[in-house]
Image 1 (tube, rainbow, N blue to C red):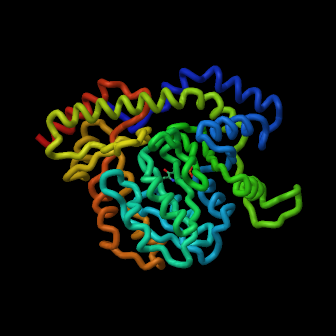
Image 2 (cartoon, rainbow, N blue to C red):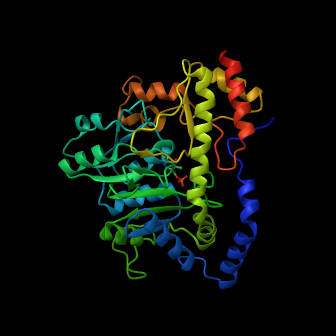
Image 3 (cartoon, rainbow, N blue to C red):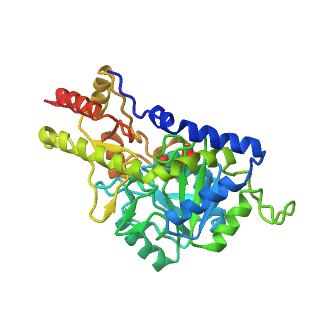
Length: 369
Ligand SMILES: *Cc1c(COP(=O)(O)O)cnc(C)c1O
């Protein structure tokens, strides 16, 4: 047995003809930057997110950075976020000139704990970035209430959560803006780097559109410092072929999650913690993540059995060497640090065969029982 974390080849086989055709159209048209394919995917994903604007950018990291800058975050501002996330969340804050303020997580969802946000708010606080980790939304109602009370911007890092919902509201609906990544392994993956900002705020959208073209408006007149950060037509063409399948793929992920949870809880519920979906949450299972004892030993054992697993994320951002000037130390965010020692993600992708899931669960049982 050799079971990878994910296998993108089945999906490609099914869509190959359509994808090649759409790429051929782009190349034949010679329109490579900000053409019809980008317009279409921006519009479709804005509609899907129930907001007015989609702004395609080069990747999910730039989407966060540009959204912050477009929302007016600048040098010396503070931005509150979680340390239990991919580096890009914290990196984008610093690239926008601001200082990250890391808040501990809710151990149930692995997402930022809204009860701990108010204690770090200062008169420099400008924004909150909740990260919808593994595909489950952070508690947006509580976060929005705090943001409204202190007049803060909310940028949802939804790189892992396209299609997630909470009490009927979608990613992007409650925040000032949300950002997606279309990195190849994300739930909606391009064949290279790509990202998008979605927002109902037309001013923020306009500013983001200017920033992604070097701050140019009109062309060759620059009133803000922007970047070259665009979703390109080739990636957009691929996304346009894939996007109509996204809901089906999310449902397949959800089904696999249910299967894992049933199989694992039959014999192991006293040892490991399967993912908990909070009431009202529609989880899209970018990752299926357990909390387990002896995590590193389990991972090594599964590897010997031909099973790939991943740890998202072994080192939280507040103790990353690059952020050491921020002054955090081990012990500052106990739930975050605990999760970094216990979390392990199992193989998850829409086409994952149930036989693989059974084999994986058997091997986990073998390890613990
Ligand atoms: C993938 C990811 C990003 C960054 O997206 P890129 O497209 O790789 O730049 C940001 N935040 C989170 C939580 C992610 O998982």
